[in-house]
Length: 210
Image (tube, rainbow, N blue to C red):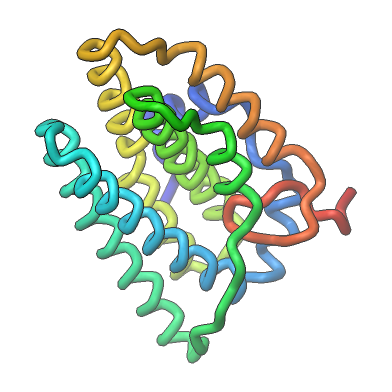
């Protein structure tokens, strides 16, 4: 099964860089850890979307889009757990990577700018996830390769949904979005391309490979 180039092109166009090969090499040597972190990421993505629904209940379009995203992320969480169980992999506590915190520290604290930034960060998280599914698929076992290709197809539109919501909010509130996208694009690039002491689904270049 080949990767869908049409699905990947918007993702690659949106991100400032591709995943370094050094990350792929080390990640493929740490699949159990990667699966555990992936499960955590799917659960956190659902939780973040749910929190936004409660915090911004007045925004109808946001409610509809995020409700769908919550359902999909929780399904994917269950699917990762099922793969772990089939591999007799016990659940372990794994600390989060620096990635999300590194992105979130640039989020503005006043509204509606804060919501715009949160949605933009969500777009980058989703886009990078898809880019990494594609980067990993050719190098892992058949079960995971099939799963990652399925996730790429299922989640490839998520980052665009987040961007659409951000732009809709800008239209309503007259808040700039393009310059914020560029800021977070460079922040995200640095997190992906700089040395990182940990290997996680969204981590940077493993220090051992630098």
